[in-house]
Length: 298
Length: 298
Image (cartoon, rainbow over all chains, first blue to last red; front, side, top):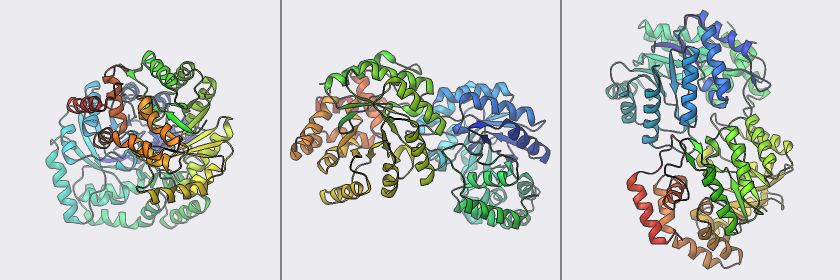
């Protein structure tokens, strides 16, 4: 359940409210595509911007529309008691696992973060995915801290940032991570642009932004890697280089992915929560051009 | 109202709830001390960790117990609509101004942040303090963006991080900031360790962490600077160097200030919101030693 391709859907907004109909459509599309799991309310799902009530509702929508596809639910929040409320709502929704990033406002210490994971692992029977996303949380995990946390009962997977570039460096890093973790804890790559490299270096899972909106595109890479066809996986990813370039030049994957979903009519315009304005008109035109060039519309 | 010493009280917790009695005591203590204003729900007041309901309650408590001392209220939140809810509760409480930091999870663009301030300035008659706190928000203001935002009607003050070290460099930076702002917008220094340097370089206000818990200590520095006695201000700050050292070696001012308030019995033990564990026993012993040495108990 914590291997293969996990798709991270957007949580679309209309007039500052969750667009439940569009969200249900996104989830059904993912379930039909054959992704291995859906992770609702990841960073791409704007979890940090939602009230506890909205998060409960979105978790229920995701599970209700996912059919047989397992749904993991992001439960991160700045305050531990709010994390626990999100865990309760994920359980009530019927989630298969929870994803937890150590959100920060005040910088956290390694002990703060360890204790947060210990509290959550102790509070639920659901498997926990450790979410290392320094670009949004500004918390830096050490490999040693991965290991400490992964010893806790209930930890199922660690979602790691891009491995270092180059085959040897990536393999070395994977070996380090593996050595720190118990055998039953999987390693999932994030950072779509380098996911093929991560999978071919031995990651068990790909926690994918783009799969949430363009599942077929991500499945081509993931299935090639899973079948051991390393060259095909890397080639399929290389063909998407113009898309990865948009991610790096337009402030990350979220704004670009939302613009693609808006272009495709999967969500309404201005689908991100304010204060995030999303891409400018000129940027959207460039996204449309690249989408056309790559045939991302299907 | 946006000059002089503004004290930032802690918001103490007991068992994951706001300790209203202790909070009222902190506010009454500040009002009696003669600080020029109180800023409730700043970073020191753990605003980012509170629910909208808790924030409304804390704003009301602050105004109710501050007597004639003006109270500003921090209204920042990750989502613009939540910021606006906090503005409404600050207005309803009787605040004299609002303090707004551009909290981030996804990194924000300058246009996102400008539009956030424009939305808030347009939504309230209360004066707005622009809160530049890159250590917690991870948003970096440019001087040009200060200027764009300060042109908005209702902007009263900009809370800036420590000026560069050295008299000439500090003066140059102040001149740059002043040149970017309309005359009616004040400049307030933050970063207690360098506040004396900021005030003697011409800052109009000191937005002070330590004043929220030890107002007399901060008033000595502020009043010396305000009376033009530059040497006395710098000397009073230099005497506190062991305290500033604790701030820099123990992960910032919040954990140390909370430990001091706990030591003095102003708040109950473990007063910070989890996941922030606060200082270790060994660190608390060191804080107690420094407090004793400096006579911080009064």
